[in-house]
Length: 316
Image (cartoon, rainbow, N blue to C red; front, side, top):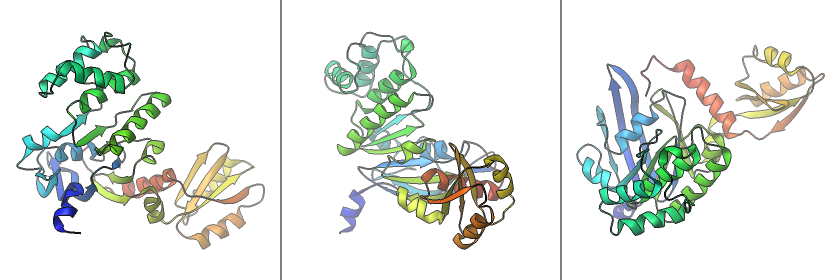
């Protein structure tokens, strides 16, 4: 494959991005490459630097050091070009509360110079299941419907890259599922999507995932690659007094994670031999069954490791 072909397949390519506020590092030496036409999940605890990174990628913030491109444009010098090709949906609803759905969409279409704004707005209304609500004021919409309206506004100018900053926070499960169905349709149509989320079920719907904590990129890859990279052996433990067992297991240095899952515990460690011995020692009234390590298991371990190693950082 030629260099031109490889570059054409890359949506975001950044190296060594660092950003500080008031002398505190928020993003540290971040390097990643994201392919076009895929859904990329961006995960990490609150204050980990996700929002700051997204803003640097789309030209809203200039990094202190490092280089990168977004859709082939330099993130330092070609901010305006990037903004013309990127849709950015923030955590907060940012459209006009006192305008109707139709008025909001037509206004956005005119701002972006979309041809036939009335037709474009109606197409967006039809596509996102907003038909019959066209004249409803935005302030009267529930969280899920506001989310659909915000997404409709973002994709009106047909961006090449869609940046979504925790778009489904506080939205009910059905609305989240409908939203993600639409995201997959957009990706199938060639749009690249970068979405930050705290929900594991949403992360598992991404083509690949980047996990950032306290400004550092700790893991990147597909769901299976992330799980494999953590190197955990996992048991599902049921029966007996699980609270007492959890307290006992917490004193075992070989164990990396203990987490309640319904009426059982997930217990995981990087040393499978040591974990087998622990399982035998704490058998008794409890049933230890080998189980598949989940993405949530992996992120719990990544989060605990990053928290233990993290210097004092600013939140973002």
